[in-house]
Amino acid sequence: MLKPTIVLTIAASLLLVVGIACGGAEEAAPAAPAAAQPTAAPASQQAAAPAATEAPAAPAPSGAQATAVPAIIATATPSPTNTPSAAQASQSVGGRLKIAVTPPVQELVRGWLGTTTSANAQVRPFAEPLVHTDRFDGSLQPGLATEWEISKPDGTQWVFRLREGVPFHGDWGEFTAHDVPHSAAMITQEEAIATDTGLFRGLFGQTQEELLENIRVVDDYTVEFNLLRPEAAMDFVVSAQQGNYFMYSKDQWDTEGFEGYIAGAAGNGPWQFESRQLGVGGNIVYSRVEDHWRQTPHWAELEQINTPEPATRLANLLTGQVQIAEVNRDLHPEAKDGGMIIVESELPSIQVAFVMGGIYSPLSPYHDPTDPHLDVRVREAINRAIDREEINKELFSGYGSPHPVWGFHPSLPGWNSRWAEEFDDKYGFDPDRARELIKESGHEGYPLKLIITQLSGVPEMITMAEAAFTYLQDVGIDVEAEEMEWARFRADFYVPGNTHGTIAPIRGTLRPAEVTLRFYNVSGPEGFQRIVPDPQLDELYAEAISAVNPDVKSTALRNAGDIKFDLYAEVPIVWLPSQIGVNPNEVGEFIWPGNINTAITHMEYITTAQ
Image (cartoon, rainbow, N blue to C red; front, side):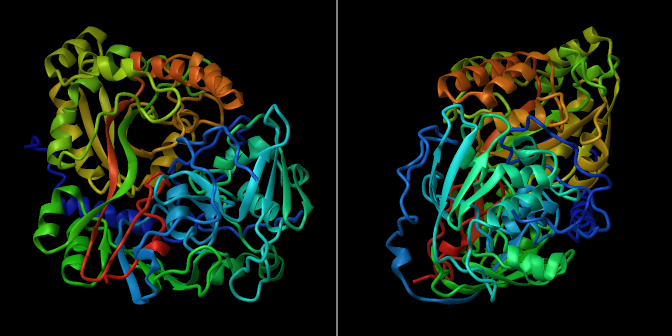
């Protein structure tokens, strides 16, 4: 069993999650505008936004064949819609589908005011990205865009052709090319704190005026993206796998402004936004869109209920108050004993790790040469202090698979089999060696702030952090634990370059390695954690994001992964599938890919029990 922790008891843990739900209740603007990120790459990371009183957003002016370059894994040949399974042929319609979820970092309906996880969980049901993601294999598929192509060989211009006849909800007319630059302008306005904000500023310009010059409406159903740097995966960038770029009605914005978007944002997704209640126990409710152009839901309504406590989510599932719930993996046996089933994503979904703060490049203004984490011996000691096998067995019920380098997966470009072969030798659990390394470094007893926080998709994150407390204390580190919302950690620590002397749990998803590099391993303003144990990572990142040739990109990524692996840049733990508890008496088929950055997606395809 896991060693006793700091006795941050279950009750204390519950208080933490309650705090998470309360702290980011309303869509929040940051204390200061997001930093400019001129060389940002695709980023579907779940970095949270600070909680604050929302400031009104300034109105934004308006303004084939898929590429052969793979976006995340080898993509299937695009088809007009996902191929339905036999169960999807059913025309039966259920009542209200209720899902108990870990509270999102932010509660929002305007995707540019939060993280990709928050936006994908709450916005994607009612608003569509340009490029759809297949629910079976995770490939990029035609959606609002029917075809696209790189129109300049250097990857600096893309043309997207749009689907005709797609209505917005309500009386806001048809989706056209004019809604595309408008929706991008939302992400780049001054108040925006989206996962994509820095990326879009880097691709299209620092001002909305620049963006609207570079995203050009050719005609009502054709849009031309002119980029400030090469981007060989623009289809990925405009998909939900990337982040927050969803299509909103420009006509509604011009007529009602931000108040209209809050009260009833008009999208063109399979669900129509109806209402929400904020805070702990709050919810967001959607209604079925009849004869939807892509997939008409099998339920009349969809309700996501914010339920912080793991035991409550399970109890609500077992007692029939909800039909689907996010269930901690160590509670799966209890769910199964109660007649529930556990359904998991089609792809490996979630990568789990700890990130060590203060590893800033010597060229960075945040660099502090006295930070113990700059010493590779300390980083190795922390890695050797963590018992991954015990965490996987006791917390994740053995579902985890090996995770040698944070940000890399065997199915993605850049993978090096050497990392898996050498992992046990370099990273294996060895507390005696960890103590020796701490003593050799001269940092024995150094103070370390352990952040205890929660993100969706890994309900065990709090207990994983609690376990780390004892592991790290045991090897001679003076650990102090502090509970906080993820939004606060983002706002107060890693965005302003103030992570010195910290370690925090993190989760990501299956996405191109350059996305993770951007958020964690770039020292410039486009980075967030800025974990750069070797400044060469900056050069390799720049090479990877500008490479149109996939072999060049893959080589740059592999070299970056070598640096991260050999220098113990992070503390990778495991890869996990996304898993959900389901009541089989009410819910039939539920298939989702797992490579979109939130707990579950594709809820419009969930059938009723036959």
